[in-house]
Image (cartoon, rainbow, N blue to C red; front, side, top):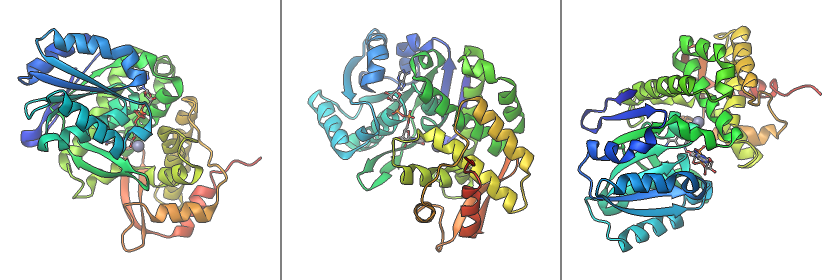
Length: 363
Ligand code: NAD
Ligand code: ZN
């Protein structure tokens, strides 16, 4: 199955299958004339998939340089990027070399950034292996690294030449990481597609079982929806792309204040979407039943739905550092119905805090 991402001369295809990793060599050569691949992965992913991918690419007569980074967000850093630049150069990278990212969002963002910057831009392919990377980070061309003081602050828009998604690799993904990725899948239903949301409600058990047919369907639909948004607002200039940020203002505040590591990203998105929904209720544009529908689906997929008890002052100041803030005013992506959200300016901070607070469970 193929999802096309229409971006003019930067258009590319996302190729989705079950077991298609074995065809990675032919896939690469069918898209570009490639002579040298720099394959970047992390330890957890390399353990299972580096050798087969390396072999399949080498079988096409392509020279492969395999580079590894430690698993985890810490690798999205200047020192790791520098070590990759230097290792690639030491193995004779040139302007015709191609970077292949094999891993989750960390590897995709980092390898994409290295591709965008090495010799002023190398061709880049993505093989996302976490559910989050398959439905979110590998689509859209945002690449980058963190500084100690700020996440994703150094980066570029650098579109891949192709994305290969193999649902079979999700078998080895830790359960918590897998469930966390499902939060972003649910997000697409709420922001853009009520039928898709209903499909998810009807397929909880197959999703928990990582049923290949259902995975294929939900990944393809998520990629299609993200691709649509990205195609209309590739570089986040018209504001449309901001709808992908549904639940994320609360999510980022939660991640910041609880300390990274406490919540996986998708878990914080789960809590954040419900805060944004209660905010919609307070603004009089969303109904409580629709909030409940989301809570029911999220908790059926074992995602957290309750707001933790944290300092409201800290939450508010974290929200005020959100990139959607304009002239000091909080702006939120607020749902109006399942399948429709609206970027809403001038939200009073007391109202946002109340939406947060009302998610705290009584003891
Ligand atoms: P991750 O890359 O750290 O992967 C999560 C964990 O799963 C890691 O330990 C990884 O080694 C492991 N893993 C991945 N695939 C596996 C597999 N098939 N089998 C076994 N283990 C596997 O984290 P993530 O959640 O994939 O991505 C998070 C990153 O994505 C963050 O840095 C975030 O900023 C970024 N992100 C980027 C975008 C974008 O548009 N570029 C969008 C959303 C998130
Ligand atoms: Zn997210």
